[in-house]
Amino acid sequence: MTFTPTKTLADKVRADFPILHQEVNGKPLVYLDNAATSQKPLLVLNTLRDYYEQYNANVHRGAHTLSAKATDAYEAARDKVAKFINAASRQEIIYTRNASEAINLVAYSWGMNNLQAGDEIILSVMEHHSNIVPWQLVAQKTGAVLKFVELTPEGSFDLSQFQQLISDKTKLVSTCHVSNTLGCINPVGEITNIAHRYGAKVLIDACQSVPHMPVDVQEINCDWLVASGHKMCAPTGIGFLYGKLELLESMPPFFGGGEMIADVYLDHSTYAELPHKFEAGTPAIAEAIALGAAIDYLSNIGMERIHAYEAELTAYLFQKLQEVPQIQVYGPKPNAQGEGRAALAAFTAADVHPNDLSTLLDQEGVAIRSGHHCTQPLHRYLDLPGTARVSLSFYNTREEIDIFIKALKETLEFFAGFME
Image 1 (cartoon, helix red, strand yellow):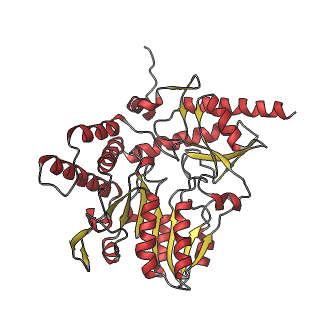
Image 2 (spheres, rainbow, N blue to C red; image 1 turned 180 degrees about the vertical axis):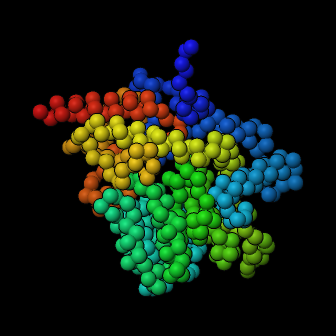
Image 3 (cartoon, helix red, strand yellow; image 1 turned 90 degrees about the horizontal axis):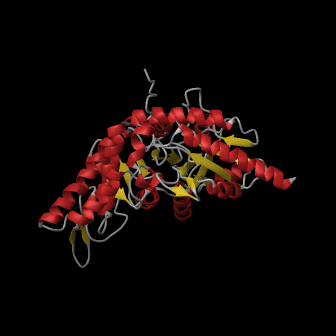
């Protein structure tokens, strides 16, 4: 009897991703930059094409067949988003261009109208720039004060320090669910419970969690949550904001224009019901419909299954990284099963600049990220000019990790010889 190894999840899905089947610099592409953006399956690509070929029309504004079909598909995708994160109502899902726009929406609609001098906003040093800069702008305009949670020695969110920072002056806590640099998985449910005891609102940046693990907004009990479609197998230019219904109802519009109105007069306007109050102008119709297709794709696989497979990859990645003594990886270590952190590793390698490392790995067909990963404050906190980052998704394989490790070793050997 011939033994046939059990196919991994990646073996079963890789044919769905055309971009993965190409050569870069004469070598098979090994795409390990998934924390920056994910690749798109055929279902998503075909959904985009079908919209433009078969029912391209504006939504909500026409009685003709194409407009009705586009509207139905656009709103069906909203239902899929709501179900995917277990929102209590479809009205709690607002389409945005990306997570950055979603955070800005909250910052300007809620923050500018609810924060005043002396109020405190708690962030963490690991936040993406999109979860720092909007709050800096709001703080400058309102007189609110920013405070930052630092890291534990293991490189995780310091919950003890957070409990010392928070007070009755705290009006908002905004933090990432998963760090795009450290890979740590923050205890967002516990953070939310603590914040709510002080009457503070909570916003969760879920860009690095929603594509990789089950996320339940009702279980977390956060007030807002944001994510970007392009990191979860959907197109660029589409993301979403989740907000508790009563909170969104209390917030004024962020953008004004068509679609978000009930009636417009020369001297005043009234606004549409949720979710349309926050969706001014012609939206990213094709991208929203394709986001729904991406959610269908992920849901058909199962987020528990995706998380379990990526944990296996994480365990293997960290096992192989131990073979490269010149590097230092930042953030907490996974356990033997790969649990306890996300499927990514940001690292430095001796005296080799991350950009040089990334450039030479690209010559071997290996795509990784280098730089500050939009976390400059974190890199300053760690006293680092930048890091290299390898980040995995469910379509990656152990063989690709082997190719990366081999190329990394050879690259470091090259630099070692060059510096002698």
